[in-house]
Image 1: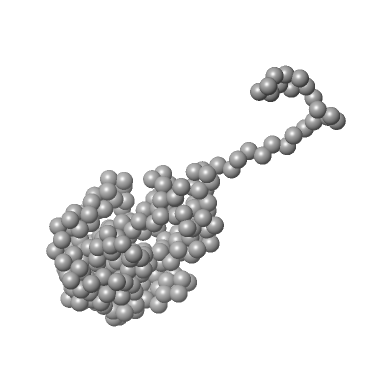
Image 2: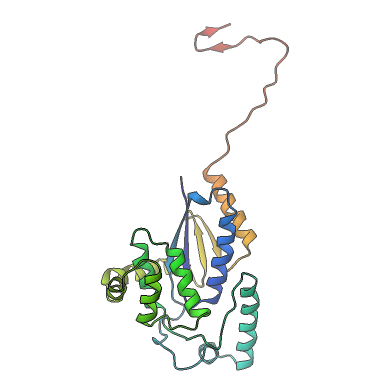
Length: 240
């Protein structure tokens, strides 16, 4: 029996990258990790964001959150500190604010293509956005990412206009709304337990163990108490 984990996240979400690293660290130390099936679900923090915002990440955040430049700088500083704890060095100056819809289409293409590690594609997209300063809405960037994971240029370009993949992405958005997701990352284990946010690795590890034990209860081990010699008893062939 597998343990199902659905993860809603956005490529344009710094905490989603941190949460991914923390969850994967917990999974790496989980005894039954080979029996865990992870499904990456799509979510957009800002569907109205243009394909490419004409300005910096700091300017974008200040405009949408109504914060001062100083407040945005403090917020990004806090995020950067947490990112470093999982080996990530965010480059806010190079980051290109861009709509993430096409990146989600690439992820759904990867999920429907046999032999492709969707988690690795997700990692590559997050790295493109937060570490390499690439526009995740740019088809050329997506073709390059897809190519590194065995997806052809034709398949990636076709995916950008694929109605079926669009429907799948929108389906993830709608499911998120229906279960009350208001922020990401958001983890759902076995459709029963939810974990919101980039929680510590230890919490993810505890959740995996708890859900596994509930699904696979340990057999009862009785200690037999008996006097010297066999006591009278009944069995399939009769009674003593």
